[in-house]
Amino acid sequence: MEIADTKGTAYLQGLIGLDYLSKENTTLAKPMKLLKAYLKDKAVKRKTLHLKFNDGELEEVTKGIYQIKINPSDKNFLNDLRDVLEDKGEDIDKRKTKPGQTITFTSGFQLYLSGRTLSNVIDESGNPVSAKKPTNDQQEDGFIINLKEGNLLPHLKINSKIGFEFSKDWYHSYQKSFEAFTDKIIKKSKLGDYEYYRDSDKKKLEMLNEITDTKILPSAKDNWNPSDLWCVKISEKDRLAKAIDKLYSERIKNSNVSIERINKFIETEFKKMNLIGVSLKQVTGSSARVDKITKDAKYINSVKFLKYGPKMAFDITKSYFDVNVKMSCLKNDTLDYFFRFRPRGSSSALTQNGEGRLEGSGPADGAVDKKNVISAMFPGADNITKVDIGKSKTIKQAVDAIAKKDKTYKSLQTWLSKGIFKFVNISNLDKTTDAQSIKRGLLNLNYVYLFDTYKDQKELYKKFYLSSKKVNEFSSIHYKISG
Image (cartoon, rainbow, N blue to C red; front, top):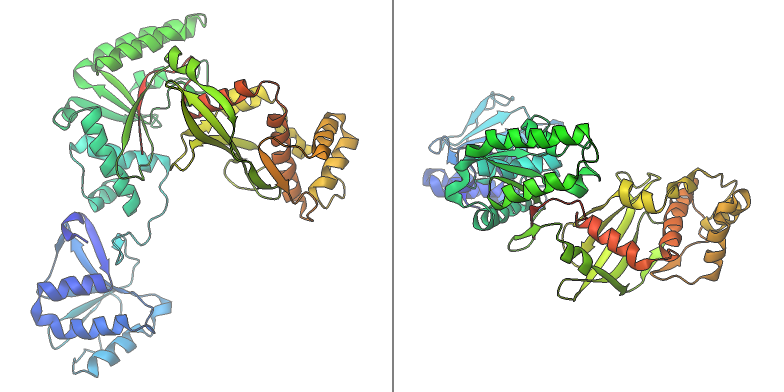
């Protein structure tokens, strides 16, 4: 890996650090060779040697100080290390073998024994060892910090500023997103003309809170404007605040005041590059794409459900199901698209949610609005999990049991008995399983039934598609970065 890219404090793990150190200081070639041979031994599974860098520089190259992370599982590591080095003629000070002390060899090579957990550890593939999936806020902050700095910061510099270890994949996403943003949205030379705010930060400008206040919106906020980032031109900030406050106050006082007035204002300021909303998606491909999303009636009217795609082999005991569809929009291009329905959060949750994405693409376009689309079209659909299933051991038995208790589910039972399904092939209806899995299976089965028998299939999937794309008749203009 490029050491110059590791700004902030970092620890290069194992062989990657030893290789670097041996190149920088040839006087340490002997202990480096011994240690490298030791770590390459297949019987040695520990990777506790770490070379410390600060702001991309090795702090004490001439001394060759290494850090060793000590924990109970490594209690024999020092003895092993001492044996392998002393056998080859490298003397070691046996008195200094406690955390916080330094072991010095005859060659001058030193090992510092760290008793704490090291942060910002880079493995031999160049990835942070302890990197976890960042939250949405951390993802967005990791990107926004670059805009505020006016440059794409090195990997570990972002880690240091945000206080989170981003993986190599996320840094790739920031790099490609930054390139696309400065190419298609705001030029790099103009980044300093703007202030940048994360939409989910309640401490952002009051005017941004006002235009996304659910009190004035006709739909869920993310279906109106799903921007993760707001760019506000500094020279126009005071004027924008006064104008937005006036529009907000008028709509609060009179709900009959059209949301289109706010939409039109945002559109005008967007085109003048004074107020720009941006939706951020992780970029996994070789480049990022920037799309301008509008509520254009021509686009909405062009969206059509054409037919179903290949049937999903649906194991009813699993936690999700897919609906593969063929859609078209604008130029009559056929899109291979699918909707995935699954519980939100834990797979054991007994409520259904959906998301849409292009077949073969990376991250989903977005969620299908639960409140204003799914629940509005299928009210009470989740209630099936509350019906007593008695002593049912299979999902088929549970369907028969609830149909006896509640006539609401008689049609579900009849539909299932016919065995003709539009978009899935169902299996394991007679498989014995636990009560929780049966309830989850009933939930999935009920939604499959409701979609399968919905009277207007074209309307159904058009609404799902537009909701996933975060576009409807109320949507405001914004950019989306994806790829």
